[in-house]
Amino acid sequence: MSSETPIIQLKNVSKTFGEVRSLSDVSLEIYPGEIVGLLGDNGAGKSTLVKTIMGFHEPDQGGEIWFKGERITEWNVAKARSLGIETIYQERALCEQQPIWRNMFMGREMRNKYRMLDVKGMREEASRLMSEHMGFTSTAVHPDNTVQTMSGGEKQGVAITRALYFDAELVILDEPTVGLSLSETKKTLDFIQRIKTSGRSAIFIDHNIFHIYPAVDRMIVLDRGKVAGNYKKSEISMDELIESMYRVARTGNLKESK
Amino acid sequence: MSSAKEVTAPKSNAVRPPSFWRRFGLQVGIWSVGLVMWLIFVALAPGAFAHKNIYLAFASTTPIFALMAIPLTLVIITGEIDLSFPSIMALSACTFSEMAQSGISIWISLFVGLLVGFLCGLINGYLVTKFNLPSLVITIGTQFLFVGIDLAWTNGSGVDLTPSKYNTINRLLVGRSFGGIANQFWWTVVAAIFLWFLLNRTKFGSHVFLTGDNKISAQLMGVNIKRVKIMTFAILGTFAALAGLIGSFEVSYFWPTMGSGLLLSAIASVFLGGTSVYGGTGSITGSFVGAFIIGAINAGIVASGVNAFYTQIFFGLVIIVSVIMQALIGKRIKK
Image (cartoon, rainbow over all chains, first blue to last red; front, top):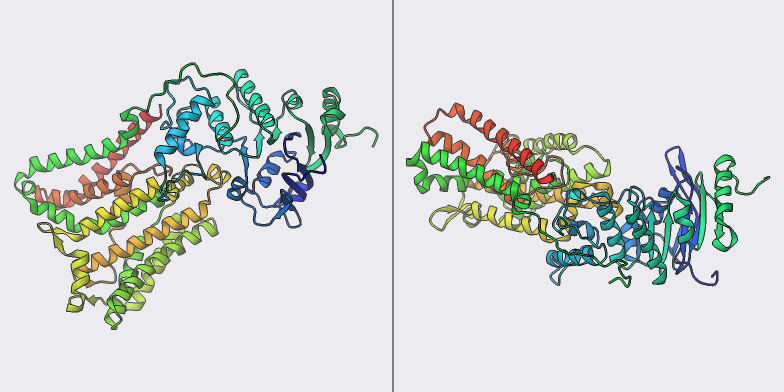
Protein backbone atom coordinates (compact mmCIF):
# COMPACT_ATOMS: atom_id res chain seq x y z
CA MET A 1 0.00 0.00 0.00
CA SER A 2 2.75 2.42 0.87
CA SER A 3 3.98 2.51 -2.71
CA GLU A 4 0.73 4.13 -3.76
CA THR A 5 0.15 7.86 -3.60
CA PRO A 6 -2.29 8.71 -0.83
CA ILE A 7 -5.50 10.47 -1.82
CA ILE A 8 -5.00 12.86 1.00
CA GLN A 9 -2.08 13.34 3.29
CA LEU A 10 -1.69 15.60 6.31
CA LYS A 11 1.78 16.54 7.48
CA ASN A 12 2.19 18.05 10.94
CA VAL A 13 -1.19 19.74 10.92
CA SER A 14 -2.05 21.71 14.02
CA LYS A 15 -5.07 23.83 14.75
CA THR A 16 -5.32 26.31 17.56
CA PHE A 17 -8.44 28.21 18.56
CA GLY A 18 -7.30 31.06 20.75
CA GLU A 19 -5.71 29.32 23.74
CA VAL A 20 -7.00 25.88 22.90
CA ARG A 21 -4.95 23.56 20.74
CA SER A 22 -7.40 21.18 19.13
CA LEU A 23 -4.93 19.40 16.87
CA SER A 24 -1.21 19.13 17.39
CA ASP A 25 1.15 17.81 14.73
CA VAL A 26 -1.31 15.41 13.17
CA SER A 27 0.16 13.43 10.29
CA LEU A 28 -1.88 10.85 8.47
CA GLU A 29 -2.60 9.57 5.01
CA ILE A 30 -5.56 7.91 3.35
CA TYR A 31 -4.92 5.58 0.40
CA PRO A 32 -7.25 4.83 -2.51
CA GLY A 33 -9.81 2.15 -1.76
CA GLU A 34 -9.20 2.33 1.94
CA ILE A 35 -11.76 2.77 4.70
CA VAL A 36 -10.18 4.33 7.75
CA GLY A 37 -11.87 4.52 11.12
CA LEU A 38 -11.14 7.55 13.25
CA LEU A 39 -11.60 6.88 16.94
CA GLY A 40 -11.27 9.09 19.92
CA ASP A 41 -13.05 10.37 22.97
CA ASN A 42 -15.12 13.53 23.06
CA GLY A 43 -12.86 16.51 22.52
CA ALA A 44 -10.12 14.43 20.93
CA GLY A 45 -10.27 16.66 17.87
CA LYS A 46 -12.11 14.39 15.43
CA SER A 47 -14.51 17.00 14.11
CA THR A 48 -11.80 19.65 13.96
CA LEU A 49 -9.67 17.25 11.94
CA VAL A 50 -12.53 16.65 9.51
CA LYS A 51 -13.21 20.36 9.09
CA THR A 52 -9.51 20.98 8.53
CA ILE A 53 -9.34 18.30 5.85
CA MET A 54 -12.36 19.91 4.20
CA GLY A 55 -10.82 23.38 4.28
CA PHE A 56 -13.42 24.83 6.65
CA HIS A 57 -10.66 25.47 9.21
CA GLU A 58 -7.31 26.71 8.06
CA PRO A 59 -4.45 24.75 9.66
CA ASP A 60 -1.87 26.65 11.72
CA GLN A 61 1.36 27.75 10.09
CA GLY A 62 3.63 24.81 9.26
CA GLY A 63 0.94 22.21 8.58
CA GLU A 64 0.70 20.81 5.07
CA ILE A 65 -2.16 19.21 3.18
CA TRP A 66 -1.29 17.09 0.17
CA PHE A 67 -3.86 15.86 -2.33
CA LYS A 68 -2.78 13.01 -4.61
CA GLY A 69 0.89 13.84 -4.19
CA GLU A 70 0.51 17.57 -4.68
CA ARG A 71 0.78 20.11 -1.96
CA ILE A 72 -2.32 22.29 -1.78
CA THR A 73 -1.79 25.83 -0.59
CA GLU A 74 -5.13 27.52 -1.15
CA TRP A 75 -7.43 25.03 0.49
CA ASN A 76 -11.13 25.73 0.95
CA VAL A 77 -14.37 23.77 1.03
CA ALA A 78 -15.36 24.52 -2.55
CA LYS A 79 -11.95 23.35 -3.75
CA ALA A 80 -11.97 20.21 -1.60
CA ARG A 81 -15.38 19.31 -2.97
CA SER A 82 -14.44 19.99 -6.57
CA LEU A 83 -11.44 17.68 -6.14
CA GLY A 84 -13.74 14.92 -4.95
CA ILE A 85 -13.95 15.04 -1.17
CA GLU A 86 -17.43 14.97 0.32
CA THR A 87 -18.34 15.01 3.98
CA ILE A 88 -21.40 13.92 5.86
CA TYR A 89 -21.15 16.18 8.86
CA GLN A 90 -22.21 15.34 12.34
CA GLU A 91 -24.43 18.40 12.31
CA ARG A 92 -25.84 17.37 8.89
CA ALA A 93 -25.05 20.75 7.32
CA LEU A 94 -28.55 21.27 5.98
CA CYS A 95 -30.51 24.46 5.52
CA GLU A 96 -33.82 23.59 7.07
CA GLN A 97 -36.08 26.20 5.50
CA GLN A 98 -34.94 25.34 1.99
CA PRO A 99 -36.44 22.70 -0.29
CA ILE A 100 -34.74 19.32 -0.53
CA TRP A 101 -33.39 19.98 -4.01
CA ARG A 102 -31.60 23.11 -2.89
CA ASN A 103 -30.03 21.21 0.01
CA MET A 104 -29.04 18.32 -2.18
CA PHE A 105 -27.14 20.60 -4.55
CA MET A 106 -25.93 23.09 -1.94
CA GLY A 107 -22.64 24.63 -3.05
CA ARG A 108 -22.59 22.62 -6.28
CA GLU A 109 -25.72 23.79 -8.04
CA MET A 110 -26.63 22.47 -11.48
CA ARG A 111 -26.65 25.08 -14.19
CA ASN A 112 -27.87 25.03 -17.75
CA LYS A 113 -25.95 26.22 -20.78
CA TYR A 114 -26.96 29.83 -20.11
CA ARG A 115 -25.33 29.57 -16.66
CA MET A 116 -28.77 29.84 -15.14
CA LEU A 117 -29.81 27.59 -12.31
CA ASP A 118 -31.31 24.38 -13.66
CA VAL A 119 -34.10 24.17 -11.08
CA LYS A 120 -36.09 21.64 -13.09
CA GLY A 121 -33.07 19.38 -13.47
CA MET A 122 -32.24 19.59 -9.78
CA ARG A 123 -35.82 18.80 -8.81
CA GLU A 124 -35.88 15.75 -11.05
CA GLU A 125 -32.49 14.52 -9.87
CA ALA A 126 -33.44 15.04 -6.23
CA SER A 127 -36.67 13.15 -6.79
CA ARG A 128 -34.88 10.28 -8.55
CA LEU A 129 -32.17 10.07 -5.89
CA MET A 130 -34.71 10.09 -3.10
CA SER A 131 -36.57 7.12 -4.49
CA GLU A 132 -33.57 5.18 -5.84
CA HIS A 133 -31.01 5.71 -3.13
CA MET A 134 -32.89 6.77 -0.07
CA GLY A 135 -35.77 4.38 -0.65
CA PHE A 136 -38.33 6.91 0.42
CA THR A 137 -41.69 5.34 0.84
CA SER A 138 -43.15 8.22 2.69
CA THR A 139 -45.72 10.02 0.60
CA ALA A 140 -44.96 13.30 2.30
CA VAL A 141 -41.54 13.76 0.77
CA HIS A 142 -41.21 15.71 -2.44
CA PRO A 143 -38.16 17.62 -3.70
CA ASP A 144 -40.00 20.88 -3.05
CA ASN A 145 -40.63 20.02 0.60
CA THR A 146 -38.52 21.92 3.05
CA VAL A 147 -36.07 19.95 5.14
CA GLN A 148 -37.66 21.09 8.41
CA THR A 149 -40.67 18.87 7.64
CA MET A 150 -38.51 15.70 7.59
CA SER A 151 -37.56 13.22 10.31
CA GLY A 152 -33.99 12.87 11.61
CA GLY A 153 -33.36 9.78 9.51
CA GLU A 154 -34.73 11.43 6.39
CA LYS A 155 -32.48 14.42 6.96
CA GLN A 156 -29.51 12.11 7.27
CA GLY A 157 -30.68 10.48 4.06
CA VAL A 158 -30.46 13.81 2.29
CA ALA A 159 -26.93 14.37 3.64
CA ILE A 160 -25.80 10.87 2.61
CA THR A 161 -27.39 11.03 -0.82
CA ARG A 162 -25.73 14.39 -1.37
CA ALA A 163 -22.29 12.92 -0.66
CA LEU A 164 -23.03 9.94 -2.85
CA TYR A 165 -24.37 11.93 -5.78
CA PHE A 166 -21.14 13.77 -6.47
CA ASP A 167 -19.21 10.54 -6.82
CA ALA A 168 -16.55 11.57 -4.34
CA GLU A 169 -13.21 9.81 -4.25
CA LEU A 170 -13.04 10.33 -0.53
CA VAL A 171 -16.13 10.38 1.64
CA ILE A 172 -15.83 11.53 5.24
CA LEU A 173 -18.57 10.44 7.61
CA ASP A 174 -18.57 12.29 10.92
CA GLU A 175 -20.68 10.32 13.40
CA PRO A 176 -23.27 9.47 10.76
CA THR A 177 -25.25 7.10 12.96
CA VAL A 178 -26.02 9.53 15.79
CA GLY A 179 -29.74 9.72 16.38
CA LEU A 180 -30.63 7.11 13.78
CA SER A 181 -32.89 4.11 14.19
CA LEU A 182 -31.50 0.58 13.87
CA SER A 183 -32.55 0.15 10.26
CA GLU A 184 -31.27 3.60 9.35
CA THR A 185 -27.95 2.76 10.99
CA LYS A 186 -27.77 -0.47 9.01
CA LYS A 187 -28.39 1.49 5.82
CA THR A 188 -25.58 3.87 6.68
CA LEU A 189 -23.16 1.00 7.35
CA ASP A 190 -24.16 -0.60 4.05
CA PHE A 191 -23.43 2.70 2.39
CA ILE A 192 -19.88 2.59 3.75
CA GLN A 193 -19.42 -0.90 2.34
CA ARG A 194 -20.57 0.33 -1.05
CA ILE A 195 -17.91 3.03 -0.98
CA LYS A 196 -15.34 0.30 -0.51
CA THR A 197 -16.67 -2.02 -3.21
CA SER A 198 -16.70 0.83 -5.69
CA GLY A 199 -12.98 1.38 -4.99
CA ARG A 200 -13.26 4.71 -3.26
CA SER A 201 -11.98 5.79 0.13
CA ALA A 202 -13.69 6.84 3.30
CA ILE A 203 -12.93 8.18 6.74
CA PHE A 204 -15.48 6.88 9.20
CA ILE A 205 -15.88 8.51 12.57
CA ASP A 206 -18.08 6.98 15.23
CA HIS A 207 -18.24 6.61 18.97
CA ASN A 208 -19.28 3.02 18.60
CA ILE A 209 -16.36 0.64 18.05
CA PHE A 210 -18.84 -2.07 17.11
CA HIS A 211 -19.86 0.04 14.13
CA ILE A 212 -16.31 1.01 13.20
CA TYR A 213 -14.40 -2.22 13.55
CA PRO A 214 -16.30 -4.39 11.05
CA ALA A 215 -16.47 -1.61 8.48
CA VAL A 216 -12.89 -0.41 8.23
CA ASP A 217 -9.43 -1.51 7.02
CA ARG A 218 -7.42 0.65 9.34
CA MET A 219 -8.00 2.62 12.50
CA ILE A 220 -6.48 5.84 13.72
CA VAL A 221 -6.89 6.69 17.36
CA LEU A 222 -6.92 10.36 18.20
CA ASP A 223 -6.33 11.57 21.73
CA ARG A 224 -6.20 15.17 22.90
CA GLY A 225 -5.41 16.38 19.40
CA LYS A 226 -2.62 13.88 18.76
CA VAL A 227 -2.51 10.68 16.75
CA ALA A 228 -2.16 8.12 19.54
CA GLY A 229 -2.34 4.98 17.43
CA ASN A 230 -2.57 3.72 13.87
CA TYR A 231 -3.53 0.05 13.34
CA LYS A 232 -4.27 -2.13 10.40
CA LYS A 233 -7.23 -4.30 11.23
CA SER A 234 -5.05 -7.42 10.93
CA GLU A 235 -2.83 -6.10 13.71
CA ILE A 236 -5.43 -5.76 16.41
CA SER A 237 -8.54 -7.59 17.55
CA MET A 238 -11.65 -5.77 18.62
CA ASP A 239 -11.06 -6.69 22.26
CA GLU A 240 -7.51 -5.41 22.17
CA LEU A 241 -8.72 -2.22 20.54
CA ILE A 242 -11.33 -1.64 23.21
CA GLU A 243 -8.73 -2.37 25.88
CA SER A 244 -6.28 0.14 24.42
CA MET A 245 -9.01 2.74 23.99
CA TYR A 246 -9.69 2.54 27.72
CA ARG A 247 -5.99 2.84 28.38
CA VAL A 248 -5.73 5.92 26.18
CA ALA A 249 -8.63 7.55 27.95
CA ARG A 250 -7.01 6.85 31.34
CA THR A 251 -3.35 7.49 30.70
CA GLY A 252 -2.97 9.06 27.28
CA ASN A 253 -0.80 6.13 26.19
CA LEU A 254 -1.78 3.23 23.98
CA LYS A 255 0.90 0.75 25.02
CA GLU A 256 1.18 -0.57 28.56
CA SER A 257 4.08 0.24 30.87
CA LYS A 258 5.30 3.37 29.26
CA MET B 1 -23.56 9.42 -11.32
CA SER B 2 -22.94 7.01 -8.57
CA SER B 3 -22.08 3.42 -9.27
CA ALA B 4 -23.47 2.31 -5.94
CA LYS B 5 -26.59 0.19 -5.85
CA GLU B 6 -29.47 0.64 -3.47
CA VAL B 7 -29.82 -2.21 -1.02
CA THR B 8 -33.55 -2.31 -0.61
CA ALA B 9 -35.89 -1.48 -3.40
CA PRO B 10 -38.34 1.18 -2.38
CA LYS B 11 -41.85 -0.15 -1.94
CA SER B 12 -43.63 2.89 -3.17
CA ASN B 13 -42.17 5.98 -4.70
CA ALA B 14 -45.35 7.93 -4.48
CA VAL B 15 -44.27 11.45 -3.76
CA ARG B 16 -46.64 14.32 -3.45
CA PRO B 17 -45.71 17.91 -3.99
CA PRO B 18 -46.33 20.25 -1.10
CA SER B 19 -49.83 21.64 -1.27
CA PHE B 20 -50.55 24.89 -3.05
CA TRP B 21 -51.24 26.50 0.30
CA ARG B 22 -47.94 25.29 1.74
CA ARG B 23 -45.98 26.65 -1.20
CA PHE B 24 -47.77 29.88 -1.93
CA GLY B 25 -49.55 30.62 1.34
CA LEU B 26 -47.52 33.73 2.09
CA GLN B 27 -47.90 35.00 -1.47
CA VAL B 28 -51.65 34.51 -1.32
CA GLY B 29 -51.58 36.38 1.99
CA ILE B 30 -49.87 39.49 0.66
CA TRP B 31 -51.93 39.61 -2.53
CA SER B 32 -55.14 39.35 -0.54
CA VAL B 33 -54.08 42.14 1.83
CA GLY B 34 -53.55 44.29 -1.25
CA LEU B 35 -56.86 43.28 -2.75
CA VAL B 36 -58.88 43.81 0.44
CA MET B 37 -57.29 47.21 0.93
CA TRP B 38 -58.08 48.18 -2.62
CA LEU B 39 -61.71 47.10 -2.20
CA ILE B 40 -61.99 49.19 0.97
CA PHE B 41 -60.64 52.22 -0.87
CA VAL B 42 -62.97 51.64 -3.80
CA ALA B 43 -65.91 51.40 -1.43
CA LEU B 44 -64.90 54.54 0.48
CA ALA B 45 -63.94 56.65 -2.51
CA PRO B 46 -65.41 55.18 -5.67
CA GLY B 47 -64.90 58.50 -7.46
CA ALA B 48 -61.16 58.57 -6.95
CA PHE B 49 -60.47 54.87 -7.28
CA ALA B 50 -62.53 54.36 -10.41
CA HIS B 51 -60.42 56.89 -12.21
CA LYS B 52 -57.02 56.04 -13.63
CA ASN B 53 -55.36 59.19 -12.31
CA ILE B 54 -54.82 57.78 -8.85
CA TYR B 55 -53.10 54.72 -10.30
CA LEU B 56 -50.90 56.93 -12.43
CA ALA B 57 -49.97 58.77 -9.26
CA PHE B 58 -49.02 55.48 -7.53
CA ALA B 59 -46.91 54.56 -10.54
CA SER B 60 -44.88 57.73 -10.25
CA THR B 61 -44.36 58.00 -6.48
CA THR B 62 -44.06 54.40 -5.25
CA PRO B 63 -41.07 53.34 -7.42
CA ILE B 64 -38.74 55.70 -5.56
CA PHE B 65 -38.76 53.40 -2.50
CA ALA B 66 -39.92 50.24 -4.31
CA LEU B 67 -36.65 50.32 -6.26
CA MET B 68 -34.84 49.99 -2.95
CA ALA B 69 -37.28 47.65 -1.20
CA ILE B 70 -36.83 45.02 -3.93
CA PRO B 71 -33.02 44.70 -3.69
CA LEU B 72 -33.23 45.18 0.11
CA THR B 73 -35.08 41.85 0.08
CA LEU B 74 -31.84 40.09 -0.87
CA VAL B 75 -29.94 41.71 1.99
CA ILE B 76 -32.65 40.72 4.48
CA ILE B 77 -32.79 37.13 3.16
CA THR B 78 -29.07 36.77 3.94
CA GLY B 79 -29.94 37.72 7.53
CA GLU B 80 -28.54 41.24 7.39
CA ILE B 81 -30.12 44.70 7.27
CA ASP B 82 -29.12 47.96 5.64
CA LEU B 83 -30.25 51.28 7.10
CA SER B 84 -27.93 53.39 4.97
CA PHE B 85 -29.57 53.09 1.55
CA PRO B 86 -31.47 56.42 1.74
CA SER B 87 -28.09 58.08 2.33
CA ILE B 88 -26.53 56.17 -0.56
CA MET B 89 -29.41 57.44 -2.66
CA ALA B 90 -28.64 61.04 -1.71
CA LEU B 91 -24.87 60.73 -2.11
CA SER B 92 -25.16 59.09 -5.55
CA ALA B 93 -27.64 61.64 -6.83
CA CYS B 94 -25.38 64.34 -5.39
CA THR B 95 -22.39 62.92 -7.27
CA PHE B 96 -24.34 62.87 -10.51
CA SER B 97 -25.76 66.37 -10.10
CA GLU B 98 -22.52 68.01 -9.05
CA MET B 99 -20.56 66.35 -11.85
CA ALA B 100 -23.12 67.12 -14.54
CA GLN B 101 -23.47 70.68 -13.32
CA SER B 102 -19.71 71.21 -13.53
CA GLY B 103 -19.90 70.35 -17.22
CA ILE B 104 -18.87 66.69 -17.26
CA SER B 105 -20.77 64.55 -19.75
CA ILE B 106 -24.19 63.46 -18.47
CA TRP B 107 -23.55 59.82 -19.28
CA ILE B 108 -20.21 59.75 -17.50
CA SER B 109 -21.86 61.45 -14.52
CA LEU B 110 -24.63 58.87 -14.63
CA PHE B 111 -22.13 56.04 -14.66
CA VAL B 112 -20.11 57.53 -11.80
CA GLY B 113 -23.31 58.17 -9.82
CA LEU B 114 -24.30 54.53 -10.08
CA LEU B 115 -20.71 53.49 -9.34
CA VAL B 116 -20.76 55.52 -6.12
CA GLY B 117 -23.90 53.65 -5.08
CA PHE B 118 -22.23 50.33 -5.87
CA LEU B 119 -19.09 51.29 -3.91
CA CYS B 120 -21.08 52.51 -0.88
CA GLY B 121 -22.82 49.12 -0.82
CA LEU B 122 -19.47 47.41 -1.17
CA ILE B 123 -18.17 49.35 1.83
CA ASN B 124 -21.19 48.31 3.91
CA GLY B 125 -20.75 44.67 2.93
CA TYR B 126 -17.02 44.74 3.51
CA LEU B 127 -17.34 46.24 7.00
CA VAL B 128 -20.08 43.80 7.98
CA THR B 129 -18.26 40.66 6.78
CA LYS B 130 -14.63 41.58 7.38
CA PHE B 131 -15.07 42.58 10.99
CA ASN B 132 -18.11 40.40 11.60
CA LEU B 133 -20.08 43.39 12.82
CA PRO B 134 -23.86 43.57 13.17
CA SER B 135 -25.11 45.26 10.01
CA LEU B 136 -27.76 47.10 12.06
CA VAL B 137 -25.04 49.04 13.85
CA ILE B 138 -22.54 49.49 11.06
CA THR B 139 -25.11 50.80 8.57
CA ILE B 140 -26.34 53.33 11.14
CA GLY B 141 -22.76 54.57 11.05
CA THR B 142 -22.41 54.58 7.27
CA GLN B 143 -25.83 56.19 6.96
CA PHE B 144 -24.49 59.27 8.77
CA LEU B 145 -21.21 59.06 6.89
CA PHE B 146 -22.71 58.94 3.38
CA VAL B 147 -25.25 61.69 3.93
CA GLY B 148 -22.57 63.67 5.74
CA ILE B 149 -20.31 63.60 2.69
CA ASP B 150 -23.28 64.63 0.56
CA LEU B 151 -24.09 67.61 2.80
CA ALA B 152 -20.47 68.75 3.10
CA TRP B 153 -19.99 68.48 -0.67
CA THR B 154 -23.11 70.44 -1.61
CA ASN B 155 -22.89 72.76 1.36
CA GLY B 156 -26.55 71.99 1.82
CA SER B 157 -27.75 73.48 -1.43
CA GLY B 158 -29.52 71.62 -4.22
CA VAL B 159 -28.95 71.45 -7.96
CA ASP B 160 -31.41 72.54 -10.59
CA LEU B 161 -31.99 69.75 -13.10
CA THR B 162 -34.24 71.65 -15.52
CA PRO B 163 -31.61 72.68 -18.13
CA SER B 164 -32.24 71.19 -21.56
CA LYS B 165 -29.09 69.07 -21.48
CA TYR B 166 -30.94 66.81 -19.05
CA ASN B 167 -33.90 66.27 -21.40
CA THR B 168 -32.84 62.86 -22.73
CA ILE B 169 -32.03 61.31 -19.39
CA ASN B 170 -35.10 62.90 -17.86
CA ARG B 171 -37.34 61.33 -20.52
CA LEU B 172 -35.57 58.01 -20.11
CA LEU B 173 -35.87 57.81 -16.34
CA VAL B 174 -39.09 59.63 -15.50
CA GLY B 175 -40.86 60.26 -18.82
CA ARG B 176 -44.39 59.09 -19.41
CA SER B 177 -45.38 56.27 -21.74
CA PHE B 178 -48.37 54.02 -22.53
CA GLY B 179 -51.06 56.53 -21.69
CA GLY B 180 -49.19 58.47 -19.06
CA ILE B 181 -47.59 55.72 -16.98
CA ALA B 182 -44.38 56.98 -15.41
CA ASN B 183 -41.24 55.34 -16.76
CA GLN B 184 -39.97 54.75 -13.25
CA PHE B 185 -42.79 52.24 -12.89
CA TRP B 186 -41.37 50.28 -15.82
CA TRP B 187 -37.90 50.54 -14.35
CA THR B 188 -39.28 49.06 -11.15
CA VAL B 189 -40.89 46.21 -13.09
CA VAL B 190 -37.60 45.59 -14.89
CA ALA B 191 -35.74 45.65 -11.56
CA ALA B 192 -38.22 43.19 -10.04
CA ILE B 193 -37.92 40.77 -12.98
CA PHE B 194 -34.13 41.04 -13.02
CA LEU B 195 -33.80 40.49 -9.27
CA TRP B 196 -36.36 37.67 -9.32
CA PHE B 197 -34.17 35.88 -11.82
CA LEU B 198 -31.06 36.65 -9.84
CA LEU B 199 -32.60 35.27 -6.66
CA ASN B 200 -34.42 32.25 -8.05
CA ARG B 201 -32.48 31.22 -11.13
CA THR B 202 -28.81 31.81 -10.40
CA LYS B 203 -26.23 30.13 -8.22
CA PHE B 204 -25.75 33.44 -6.44
CA GLY B 205 -29.47 33.56 -5.59
CA SER B 206 -29.38 30.05 -4.20
CA HIS B 207 -26.45 31.06 -2.04
CA VAL B 208 -28.39 34.09 -0.79
CA PHE B 209 -31.06 31.76 0.61
CA LEU B 210 -28.53 29.27 2.01
CA THR B 211 -26.47 32.01 3.69
CA GLY B 212 -29.50 33.41 5.48
CA ASP B 213 -30.90 30.02 6.39
CA ASN B 214 -27.87 28.54 8.14
CA LYS B 215 -24.54 30.17 7.51
CA ILE B 216 -22.51 27.37 9.11
CA SER B 217 -24.15 24.71 6.94
CA ALA B 218 -23.65 26.88 3.88
CA GLN B 219 -19.96 27.36 4.71
CA LEU B 220 -19.46 23.66 5.41
CA MET B 221 -20.79 22.97 1.92
CA GLY B 222 -18.50 25.52 0.33
CA VAL B 223 -20.67 28.63 0.00
CA ASN B 224 -18.63 31.81 0.27
CA ILE B 225 -21.05 33.62 2.55
CA LYS B 226 -18.91 36.75 2.86
CA ARG B 227 -18.88 37.31 -0.87
CA VAL B 228 -22.62 36.65 -1.06
CA LYS B 229 -23.34 39.24 1.63
CA ILE B 230 -21.02 41.85 0.12
CA MET B 231 -22.71 41.41 -3.25
CA THR B 232 -26.21 41.87 -1.84
CA PHE B 233 -25.17 45.13 -0.19
CA ALA B 234 -23.52 46.29 -3.43
CA ILE B 235 -26.62 45.47 -5.49
CA LEU B 236 -28.79 47.42 -3.05
CA GLY B 237 -26.35 50.35 -3.25
CA THR B 238 -26.55 50.43 -7.04
CA PHE B 239 -30.35 50.40 -7.03
CA ALA B 240 -30.39 53.10 -4.33
CA ALA B 241 -28.31 55.22 -6.72
CA LEU B 242 -30.85 54.63 -9.50
CA ALA B 243 -33.68 55.54 -7.11
CA GLY B 244 -31.80 58.71 -6.21
CA LEU B 245 -31.56 59.77 -9.85
CA ILE B 246 -35.22 58.97 -10.47
CA GLY B 247 -36.27 60.83 -7.33
CA SER B 248 -34.28 63.88 -8.42
CA PHE B 249 -35.49 63.91 -12.01
CA GLU B 250 -39.11 63.35 -11.00
CA VAL B 251 -39.02 66.85 -9.49
CA SER B 252 -36.20 68.14 -11.74
CA TYR B 253 -34.25 69.15 -8.70
CA PHE B 254 -31.60 67.46 -6.61
CA TRP B 255 -31.96 68.25 -2.94
CA PRO B 256 -29.22 67.03 -0.59
CA THR B 257 -31.53 65.67 2.10
CA MET B 258 -33.46 63.46 -0.29
CA GLY B 259 -34.15 59.95 0.87
CA SER B 260 -34.97 60.80 4.46
CA GLY B 261 -38.40 59.36 5.21
CA LEU B 262 -38.05 56.52 2.73
CA LEU B 263 -36.19 54.16 5.04
CA LEU B 264 -39.17 52.77 6.91
CA SER B 265 -41.38 52.66 3.82
CA ALA B 266 -38.87 50.42 2.08
CA ILE B 267 -38.25 48.17 5.09
CA ALA B 268 -42.00 47.90 5.77
CA SER B 269 -42.56 46.88 2.12
CA VAL B 270 -40.11 44.00 2.49
CA PHE B 271 -41.66 42.66 5.69
CA LEU B 272 -45.16 43.22 4.39
CA GLY B 273 -44.13 41.09 1.41
CA GLY B 274 -43.46 38.09 3.61
CA THR B 275 -39.67 38.14 3.83
CA SER B 276 -38.51 36.67 7.11
CA VAL B 277 -36.85 38.94 9.66
CA TYR B 278 -34.63 35.98 10.57
CA GLY B 279 -33.40 35.44 7.03
CA GLY B 280 -33.54 32.38 4.83
CA THR B 281 -36.87 33.02 3.15
CA GLY B 282 -38.27 35.90 1.20
CA SER B 283 -39.83 36.95 -2.02
CA ILE B 284 -39.22 39.61 -4.64
CA THR B 285 -42.83 39.68 -5.82
CA GLY B 286 -43.91 40.03 -2.18
CA SER B 287 -41.75 43.13 -1.74
CA PHE B 288 -43.03 44.55 -5.04
CA VAL B 289 -46.66 44.17 -3.98
CA GLY B 290 -45.78 45.29 -0.45
CA ALA B 291 -44.29 48.52 -1.76
CA PHE B 292 -47.40 49.33 -3.78
CA ILE B 293 -49.62 48.61 -0.77
CA ILE B 294 -47.58 51.07 1.30
CA GLY B 295 -47.69 53.54 -1.57
CA ALA B 296 -51.44 53.20 -1.94
CA ILE B 297 -52.19 53.77 1.73
CA ASN B 298 -51.09 57.39 1.70
CA ALA B 299 -52.97 58.38 -1.41
CA GLY B 300 -55.90 56.13 -0.57
CA ILE B 301 -56.53 57.69 2.82
CA VAL B 302 -56.51 61.19 1.41
CA ALA B 303 -58.69 60.25 -1.56
CA SER B 304 -61.17 58.52 0.74
CA GLY B 305 -61.78 61.84 2.40
CA VAL B 306 -60.42 60.70 5.74
CA ASN B 307 -58.41 63.27 7.62
CA ALA B 308 -54.79 62.84 6.51
CA PHE B 309 -53.70 62.73 10.13
CA TYR B 310 -55.26 59.29 10.31
CA THR B 311 -52.86 57.94 7.67
CA GLN B 312 -50.35 56.67 10.16
CA ILE B 313 -52.95 54.79 12.18
CA PHE B 314 -54.05 52.96 9.06
CA PHE B 315 -50.45 52.41 8.10
CA GLY B 316 -49.65 50.86 11.45
CA LEU B 317 -52.72 48.64 11.43
CA VAL B 318 -52.03 47.26 7.95
CA ILE B 319 -48.43 46.42 8.82
CA ILE B 320 -49.26 44.86 12.20
CA VAL B 321 -52.16 42.81 10.87
CA SER B 322 -50.15 41.61 7.85
CA VAL B 323 -47.17 40.55 9.89
CA ILE B 324 -49.36 38.69 12.41
CA MET B 325 -51.14 37.00 9.52
CA GLN B 326 -47.81 35.93 8.05
CA ALA B 327 -46.68 34.50 11.36
CA LEU B 328 -49.86 32.45 11.56
CA ILE B 329 -49.59 31.26 7.96
CA GLY B 330 -45.90 30.48 8.51
CA LYS B 331 -46.77 28.31 11.51
CA ARG B 332 -49.35 26.38 9.52
CA ILE B 333 -46.87 25.83 6.70
CA LYS B 334 -44.23 24.39 9.02
CA LYS B 335 -46.59 21.78 10.45
